[in-house]
Length: 226
Ligand code: ADE
Image 1 (tube, helix red, strand yellow):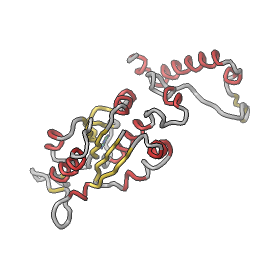
Image 2 (cartoon, rainbow, N blue to C red; image 1 turned 90 degrees about the vertical axis):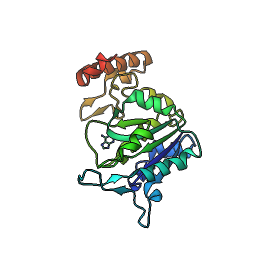
Image 3 (cartoon, rainbow, N blue to C red; image 1 turned 60 degrees about the vertical axis):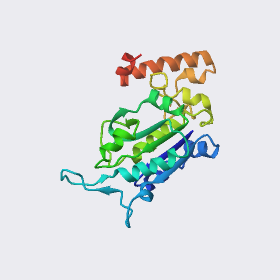
Image 4 (cartoon, rainbow, N blue to C red; image 1 turned 120 degrees about the vertical axis):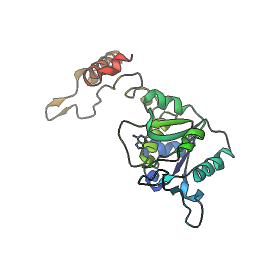
């Protein structure tokens, strides 16, 4: 999979995308991540990427030209399955959407900007708008990093134990059961007996039951969607 992220603040993306599973997935060649600085496509002496909004409101709006040029520099090289714009207006990211995106070959993520981008970009270039939740961030970079994290860890081989992506919260529409490690008794707080039993069937049954119980207690609306 190849992900190209177009951003006006590329430094915000470097650290979140260079550690742990994402970094290993890149090292293994499972994903190629490129961060494109929108300022490289700005116009004039000052490489301008934004301008005052028509209508006289405060703040600056990202111009069409640098974004269309940045996207064209990518689409001239290869086909893209999706050109995503991060925005609080978009479809809310969830696990089924992350699964769907992880099956795509090439995607572009265009990071939103606090005041917005010229609407013609959204109308004529972007193919999908994604929000990471009903709150407003100052820019789309952190949202893009969240999308990349949720998607890349699902690419087969990205996680050392491929089964662990399958046992994630939400993967089957349920929250994950509790997990514990040694010692089995800490300050008198004991690990559930069944986990020490060595009986895989009993352990699996307990995990399934806890997943349902935790979902019912913490996120009952998830059970309604089953
Ligand atoms: N940009 C600003 N807020 C956002 C959000 N909640 N999701 C995605 N992009 C955003």
